Length: 162
Image (cartoon, rainbow, N blue to C red; front, side, top):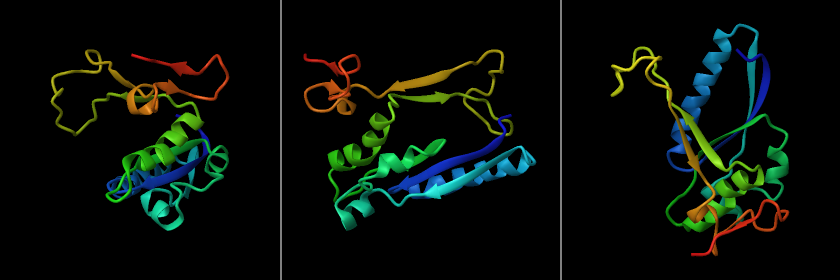
């Protein structure tokens, strides 16, 4: 098990993010409790999202990426709200963070949890070993014109035309 104190930036965002992120933090706090003194988390919450946009005209503060760079992890909820165009919320927060920190994939390991009835209930740790990887470098994640990481050094920018 990892040891130490991990600084986590918390961005609940909008909608369901404000419901699920606090529950996820409870899980992390319980994990830290069960670890004894070997694991701890220091959380700092940022109020960025569509409400922030409606109040300030920005999805996150101008120095947001700089502020986030000092953390070990970013716990991000959800983004989007009626009345704020999707391209504003997506590009102003979610993609600004993902592309700003070169996070091009969502990696989701699959686990069988004790006490939970799963559609995979007949599987065992020996028969299931899945990791779902969702690449975030195409479609709406690439932007208009099919360019991803535009303006980065020439070895990383990708342009797709079809």
